[in-house]
Length: 161
Image (cartoon, rainbow, N blue to C red):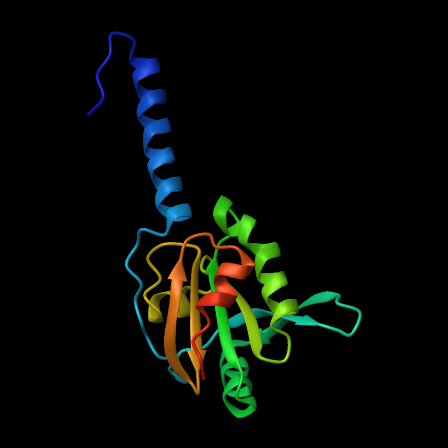
């Protein structure tokens, strides 16, 4: 509990301290990573990032389970970025995920899931801290990272098939 002879200042300092701590946790990736396989009974919507021949990245709304099935049949690694629009590190991660989609084109399918609108998916995958990036291969969980990471760091973490 914060104490001060000037209550307004103490309250602002406490709030600033909490916000700073939460930001460090989110950026630093201190949270424990949970591994959960997809379940066809749990579904929702996601944005799929695709790159064309001219390296233009497009965002298309897709059915989550359809993307999982597409990754499974194509043999590609599915990368899912769980985040939220209000989250600073999540916003910083958006262009990095576009780079991942472009740099690993042909090898991965990249999705983003908004945890605020896709409650069932977030709950199923036990997303506790965001951004939370998960890898799936052959329809099964294959690891992931929590917190902000650059495209190069994410690509380096993609598990071998």
